[in-house]
Amino acid sequence: GQNIDQPTEMTATEGAIVQINCTYQTSGFNGLFWYQQHAGEAPTFLSYNVLDGLEEKGRFSSFLSRSKGYSYLLLKELQMKDSASYLCAVRDLAGGSYIPTFGRGTSLIVHP
Amino acid sequence: DTAVSQTPKYLVTQMGNDKSIKCEQNLGHDTMYWYKQDSKKFLKIMFSYNNKELIINETVPNRFSPKSPDKAHLNLHINSLELGDSAVYFCASSQPTGLPAGNTEAFFGQGTRLTVV
Image (tube, rainbow over all chains, first blue to last red; front, side, top):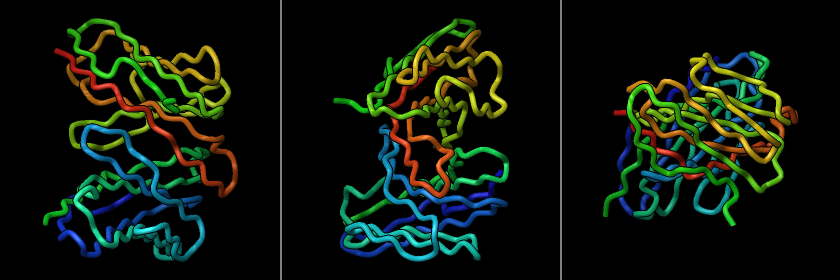
Protein backbone atom coordinates (compact mmCIF):
# COMPACT_ATOMS: atom_id res chain seq x y z
CA GLY A 1 0.00 0.00 0.00
CA GLN A 2 0.90 3.64 0.01
CA ASN A 3 1.66 6.10 2.78
CA ILE A 4 0.07 9.35 1.73
CA ASP A 5 0.62 12.35 3.94
CA GLN A 6 -0.93 15.80 3.68
CA PRO A 7 -1.58 18.53 6.26
CA THR A 8 -4.86 18.21 8.11
CA GLU A 9 -5.88 21.84 7.93
CA MET A 10 -4.74 25.12 6.38
CA THR A 11 -6.07 28.65 6.47
CA ALA A 12 -5.53 31.45 3.97
CA THR A 13 -6.84 34.87 3.06
CA GLU A 14 -9.12 35.66 0.14
CA GLY A 15 -7.05 36.75 -2.86
CA ALA A 16 -3.89 35.05 -1.63
CA ILE A 17 -2.01 31.98 -2.89
CA VAL A 18 -1.90 28.70 -0.98
CA GLN A 19 0.13 25.55 -1.58
CA ILE A 20 -1.11 22.18 -0.30
CA ASN A 21 1.58 19.52 -0.12
CA CYS A 22 1.27 15.77 -0.48
CA THR A 23 4.01 13.22 0.09
CA TYR A 24 3.71 9.55 -0.69
CA GLN A 25 5.62 6.27 -0.70
CA THR A 26 4.96 3.72 -3.44
CA SER A 27 6.71 0.84 -5.18
CA GLY A 28 5.07 1.25 -8.57
CA PHE A 29 3.90 4.84 -8.96
CA ASN A 30 1.45 5.30 -11.81
CA GLY A 31 -0.25 8.64 -11.34
CA LEU A 32 -1.38 11.18 -8.77
CA PHE A 33 -4.77 12.86 -8.58
CA TRP A 34 -6.11 15.89 -6.73
CA TYR A 35 -9.78 16.15 -5.84
CA GLN A 36 -11.82 18.90 -4.20
CA GLN A 37 -14.62 18.07 -1.80
CA HIS A 38 -17.00 20.64 -0.35
CA ALA A 39 -18.76 19.78 2.90
CA GLY A 40 -21.64 17.40 2.31
CA GLU A 41 -20.81 16.94 -1.35
CA ALA A 42 -19.01 14.44 -3.56
CA PRO A 43 -15.31 14.75 -4.45
CA THR A 44 -14.69 16.36 -7.85
CA PHE A 45 -11.60 15.91 -9.98
CA LEU A 46 -9.10 18.78 -10.17
CA SER A 47 -5.89 17.49 -11.71
CA TYR A 48 -3.78 14.51 -12.72
CA ASN A 49 0.04 14.18 -12.84
CA VAL A 50 2.03 11.18 -13.99
CA LEU A 51 5.22 12.89 -15.25
CA ASP A 52 7.41 15.33 -13.35
CA GLY A 53 6.52 18.97 -13.66
CA LEU A 54 3.72 21.42 -13.37
CA GLU A 55 0.21 21.09 -14.77
CA GLU A 56 -1.71 24.35 -14.89
CA LYS A 57 -5.44 24.66 -15.13
CA GLY A 58 -6.80 28.15 -14.53
CA ARG A 59 -6.32 29.23 -10.93
CA PHE A 60 -5.23 25.72 -9.94
CA SER A 61 -1.85 24.10 -10.68
CA SER A 62 -0.43 20.77 -9.59
CA PHE A 63 3.22 19.79 -9.40
CA LEU A 64 4.84 16.37 -9.22
CA SER A 65 8.33 15.14 -8.36
CA ARG A 66 8.44 11.34 -8.64
CA SER A 67 11.99 11.07 -7.30
CA LYS A 68 10.95 12.89 -4.13
CA GLY A 69 7.53 11.29 -3.79
CA TYR A 70 6.08 14.77 -3.60
CA SER A 71 3.26 16.77 -5.11
CA TYR A 72 1.60 20.05 -4.38
CA LEU A 73 -1.61 21.75 -5.37
CA LEU A 74 -1.32 25.50 -5.85
CA LEU A 75 -4.41 27.67 -5.62
CA LYS A 76 -4.12 31.27 -6.78
CA GLU A 77 -6.41 34.26 -6.26
CA LEU A 78 -8.23 32.43 -3.53
CA GLN A 79 -11.97 32.83 -3.32
CA MET A 80 -14.28 32.07 -0.43
CA LYS A 81 -15.78 29.21 -2.44
CA ASP A 82 -12.37 27.50 -2.41
CA SER A 83 -12.98 26.58 1.23
CA ALA A 84 -13.14 22.80 0.97
CA SER A 85 -11.23 19.61 1.59
CA TYR A 86 -8.48 18.78 -0.94
CA LEU A 87 -7.71 15.10 -1.41
CA CYS A 88 -4.48 13.69 -2.81
CA ALA A 89 -4.80 10.21 -4.35
CA VAL A 90 -2.00 7.98 -5.64
CA ARG A 91 -2.17 5.05 -8.02
CA ASP A 92 0.37 2.32 -7.26
CA LEU A 93 0.67 -0.71 -9.52
CA ALA A 94 2.95 -2.64 -7.18
CA GLY A 95 0.12 -4.44 -5.46
CA GLY A 96 -1.47 -5.42 -8.76
CA SER A 97 -4.24 -2.90 -8.28
CA TYR A 98 -4.85 0.15 -10.42
CA ILE A 99 -7.15 1.74 -7.88
CA PRO A 100 -6.01 5.12 -6.52
CA THR A 101 -5.65 5.35 -2.75
CA PHE A 102 -6.70 8.58 -1.09
CA GLY A 103 -4.90 10.55 1.58
CA ARG A 104 -6.85 11.89 4.54
CA GLY A 105 -7.41 15.26 2.89
CA THR A 106 -6.50 18.85 3.75
CA SER A 107 -9.27 21.10 4.98
CA LEU A 108 -8.69 24.60 3.56
CA ILE A 109 -10.41 27.55 5.21
CA VAL A 110 -10.43 30.80 3.25
CA HIS A 111 -11.29 33.89 5.28
CA PRO A 112 -11.96 37.47 4.16
CA ASP B 1 -28.46 14.56 -16.54
CA THR B 2 -26.65 13.13 -13.54
CA ALA B 3 -23.52 11.21 -14.52
CA VAL B 4 -23.35 9.00 -11.41
CA SER B 5 -26.49 8.74 -9.31
CA GLN B 6 -27.00 6.81 -6.12
CA THR B 7 -30.05 6.30 -3.95
CA PRO B 8 -31.06 6.90 -1.31
CA LYS B 9 -29.23 10.06 -0.25
CA TYR B 10 -30.01 9.46 3.42
CA LEU B 11 -30.62 6.14 5.14
CA VAL B 12 -31.42 5.70 8.82
CA THR B 13 -31.88 2.16 10.06
CA GLN B 14 -31.61 -0.02 13.12
CA MET B 15 -28.80 -2.39 14.01
CA GLY B 16 -29.24 -5.82 12.56
CA ASN B 17 -31.22 -4.72 9.52
CA ASP B 18 -30.30 -5.43 5.91
CA LYS B 19 -30.18 -2.53 3.47
CA SER B 20 -29.17 -1.78 -0.11
CA ILE B 21 -27.79 1.31 -1.81
CA LYS B 22 -28.21 1.62 -5.56
CA CYS B 23 -25.82 3.23 -8.02
CA GLU B 24 -26.10 3.92 -11.73
CA GLN B 25 -23.76 5.68 -14.17
CA ASN B 26 -24.55 6.92 -17.68
CA LEU B 27 -20.97 7.73 -18.69
CA GLY B 28 -20.30 4.46 -20.45
CA HIS B 29 -17.49 3.68 -18.02
CA ASP B 30 -16.29 0.12 -17.56
CA THR B 31 -15.17 0.43 -13.94
CA MET B 32 -17.28 1.28 -10.91
CA TYR B 33 -16.34 1.63 -7.24
CA TRP B 34 -17.72 1.89 -3.75
CA TYR B 35 -15.93 4.08 -1.21
CA LYS B 36 -16.62 4.59 2.48
CA GLN B 37 -15.95 7.99 4.05
CA ASP B 38 -15.83 7.97 7.83
CA SER B 39 -16.42 10.78 10.30
CA LYS B 40 -12.83 11.94 9.86
CA LYS B 41 -13.42 12.32 6.12
CA PHE B 42 -11.05 9.48 5.20
CA LEU B 43 -12.14 8.08 1.83
CA LYS B 44 -11.42 4.36 1.69
CA ILE B 45 -11.94 2.02 -1.27
CA MET B 46 -14.29 -0.90 -0.60
CA PHE B 47 -14.89 -2.52 -3.98
CA SER B 48 -14.17 -2.06 -7.65
CA TYR B 49 -15.97 -3.76 -10.52
CA ASN B 50 -14.69 -3.94 -14.08
CA ASN B 51 -17.08 -5.41 -16.63
CA LYS B 52 -19.05 -7.14 -13.87
CA GLU B 53 -16.00 -8.77 -12.38
CA LEU B 54 -14.78 -7.91 -8.92
CA ILE B 55 -11.18 -6.81 -9.22
CA ILE B 56 -10.49 -5.64 -5.71
CA ASN B 57 -11.91 -6.09 -2.24
CA GLU B 58 -10.10 -4.19 0.48
CA THR B 59 -10.67 -6.54 3.44
CA VAL B 60 -14.25 -5.40 3.76
CA PRO B 61 -16.44 -7.57 6.02
CA ASN B 62 -18.45 -10.12 4.09
CA ARG B 63 -21.62 -8.48 5.39
CA PHE B 64 -21.02 -6.09 2.51
CA SER B 65 -21.71 -7.47 -0.95
CA PRO B 66 -21.57 -5.57 -4.24
CA LYS B 67 -23.97 -6.62 -6.95
CA SER B 68 -23.63 -5.54 -10.58
CA PRO B 69 -26.46 -6.57 -12.93
CA ASP B 70 -24.71 -4.75 -15.81
CA LYS B 71 -21.78 -2.42 -16.28
CA ALA B 72 -23.90 0.68 -15.67
CA HIS B 73 -25.01 -0.43 -12.22
CA LEU B 74 -23.19 -1.36 -9.02
CA ASN B 75 -25.39 -1.80 -5.97
CA LEU B 76 -24.17 -2.27 -2.42
CA HIS B 77 -25.99 -4.65 -0.10
CA ILE B 78 -25.25 -4.67 3.61
CA ASN B 79 -26.41 -7.43 5.96
CA SER B 80 -26.75 -7.24 9.74
CA LEU B 81 -25.91 -3.57 10.00
CA GLU B 82 -23.68 -2.46 12.89
CA LEU B 83 -23.20 0.93 14.54
CA GLY B 84 -19.72 1.16 13.03
CA ASP B 85 -21.17 1.02 9.54
CA SER B 86 -22.46 4.57 9.96
CA ALA B 87 -20.64 6.64 7.33
CA VAL B 88 -21.10 8.24 3.94
CA TYR B 89 -20.87 5.76 1.08
CA PHE B 90 -19.82 7.01 -2.33
CA CYS B 91 -20.26 5.27 -5.63
CA ALA B 92 -17.90 6.26 -8.45
CA SER B 93 -17.01 5.26 -11.99
CA SER B 94 -14.07 5.70 -14.36
CA GLN B 95 -12.55 4.39 -17.53
CA PRO B 96 -10.70 1.10 -17.09
CA THR B 97 -7.91 1.55 -14.60
CA GLY B 98 -5.73 -0.88 -16.53
CA LEU B 99 -4.80 1.81 -19.04
CA PRO B 100 -1.10 2.45 -18.43
CA ALA B 101 -0.35 5.97 -17.27
CA GLY B 102 -3.83 7.03 -18.28
CA ASN B 103 -5.90 9.71 -16.64
CA THR B 104 -8.66 7.61 -15.19
CA GLU B 105 -10.32 10.26 -13.08
CA ALA B 106 -13.23 9.02 -11.06
CA PHE B 107 -16.68 10.58 -11.17
CA PHE B 108 -18.50 10.35 -7.85
CA GLY B 109 -22.15 10.08 -6.96
CA GLN B 110 -23.59 12.47 -4.38
CA GLY B 111 -23.12 10.01 -1.55
CA THR B 112 -25.42 8.09 0.78
CA ARG B 113 -25.29 9.06 4.43
CA LEU B 114 -25.99 5.87 6.38
CA THR B 115 -26.85 6.16 10.05
CA VAL B 116 -27.24 3.00 12.08
CA VAL B 117 -29.07 3.43 15.41
